[in-house]
Amino acid sequence: MANCLTSKPPIGIYRSIAVVEVERHMRSTTKTTLLVVLLVCVIAGTTNAGLVKVPKRYNVIDFIGGYSLPVGKYDGLAGFVDFENQAGRPVDIDADRLYDPSYHFGFNYGQIRNNHILFSVGFRFTHIDHISLAAATVEDLAPDMEPGDALTISGYQMFFEPKKPSVNMYDLDFNLNYLFSNVTEFPVAPYAGVGVTGGLTAATAKGYDSESRIEVLARVNFGLEFKFWQAASKRSFLTVASINSYDFVASGDRPRHLYLGGALKYYFRP
Image (cartoon, rainbow, N blue to C red; front, side, top):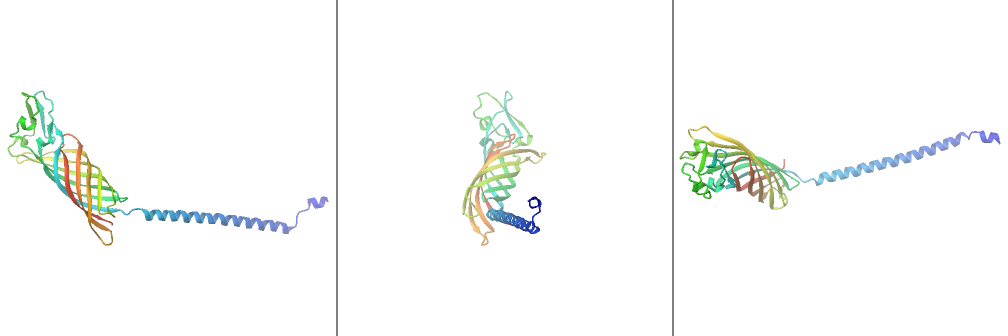
């Protein structure tokens, strides 16, 4: 009995046990491998589907131009001339008493993403048509001043000559607009957005040194685009757009405007 209890099992039993363990291990490894392969396929399929769904990006170039209406109040003329009362306090003057409506033009380059978000950077030239200070009176500039109160005008001498100096703005524009419909698929797309402008306001006159100031402003943009042509490949198309904006804040006495204009815009894929 003792020999039976202490005797080792036959060698064949060990071999059978080993074969069973190997088969279990192979089945476990196979299952694990299949699960990994399946997971990789699922991830690859999901990734591929995601890539397919990414909206196509279009680059855009536009050429703008239009009407510029001065807005706001100022105690100075483009930072070159100051208006004060007899006590030395700044006098606010309505924009339409300092500036006449004028014009602007420029161009932009940008990219539309997700079919709705349009980033752009560009250049804008704005002419400033200010009044002649040589013959200006208190009634012309500040009719609401108290009777007997004096208006003092001080600044660069070129602004007091009979012939007005030329005053212009040369700006870099940065815009972020949102198109409320997909202009790549639909013919009409209203939009709204914001913009930041920074640049040079320069005054020049014959016989005087040029004067200039660097200033910035922020504005709101709004308008509407109409698509009137599209290539058969759909890789490019043309739109005409109303390009409007309102300058709501600016540094110094930089002139602010309500811009009303239009643009020809060319969208294309590389």
